[in-house]
Amino acid sequence: MIKKINHLTFPVSDLKKTVAFYEKILGLKKTGEWGNYVIFDVGGTELAFETKGEQQIYMLVDDVDKEYQDLKKKGVKFVSEPKDQPWGGRTAMFADMDGNKFILESFKK
View (cartoon, one colour):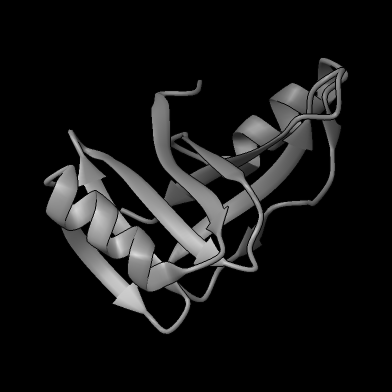
C-alpha cells in the first residue's frame, strides 16, 4: 500500500539560483546538498532539485518487493525491478497508462 509521496525531484539549470530561491525567498529548510543535488523539507516531504536530472516522484511503501509483486499481478508495467540504492533505500519504477513514471521506495527498519 502506498503511504505517501515521500520525495519529489525536479531538474534545474542552475542549482545556486534554485537554492537561493527555495531557501531565502520561500524559506524552506535545506536538509542536504551535494555537488548537483539539493533537498528541502516541505512538511515531511522531501523536495529535491538536480542539475541535468529528470523529474522523479517517490512513493513510500512498507516493502518494495511485496508491492512490486502485488502490482505486477494487477497488470502494472514496471520499468525497473526492485533494487537496493546506495543511499539506503530500495526502489522499483513503474509507469501508468500514459507513461508517467513513479518510483516505489522503502527503507529497511
